[in-house]
Length: 389
Image (cartoon, rainbow, N blue to C red; front, side, top):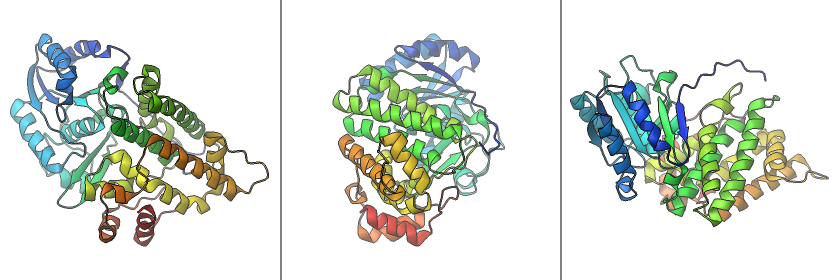
């Protein structure tokens, strides 16, 4: 490993069946006023809401609620939450839901006491908080984003057609604790499960496809990808298979808790393009990634044939005998495409509502990040989007 790094992850995890019972032991560490944050109401149908509220009341907490956090949380919803949390004098923000709800809670954490416009400060200028921040806890109901163990928070500004993630530098923004019960994920529709699985896979790819040194982080990434492929195929046939779903949930956490990015550069351009698609369509995040991935990776593959060859052999089991690096690398991407079709993932942005006349605007909304083997310009992004149609 050639890179120097610091690693700290203070999030405490409670994993497994019935793990929500440990929430009661965490609550005394925080003040009386809790803001409960959740999405569209599914947690009320499946009983998770009742379980959590019962524990909060038994802990003597004064509870306010922010309901209706959408899959792509908007800046308007963030402003609404700031008002509620300020009025409640919040001591703890408790997110109960998927990655978007957890992301929203972290964005709220740095915004409640911020004297500036949080969108301008955190998502346009990418500054760090200079104000008091609020502690966040998560009760996870969907596997995918890894938001339960990192300091990232993605917010969408529909008026500006921008969907931007800020990964805060200070580990204090990470959730103080997260409850991960795989049973909570078993009621998800197949579309959402598949989208979450691809989000996990792409998180690993974004950290894997950069650098050529002999890096332990890449070996960890390959193991996580192989585990995910194995479990995803089982879950695709039997969505109630607890073992497969628990492995998927655990892989999601390790895919983006910063561990496998240590000591190397990273390439987040699939996320940047996918998030721009999401800003223009409000499509499901994991599906925006799946729709642009193959075109992007085929675009950058010539700049990194050795790594794509390794990906093909180590992750997809391609036999390299008698083949050129380019042939092996393409076989790997073809195997990846076959798995994506097997999982029912979206492979074309047109399926998400993108029309030809939208491509220029999506490309303009795409942030260009360095770190990968090749940083595309806006014209290349347009070409990738057209190839993804």
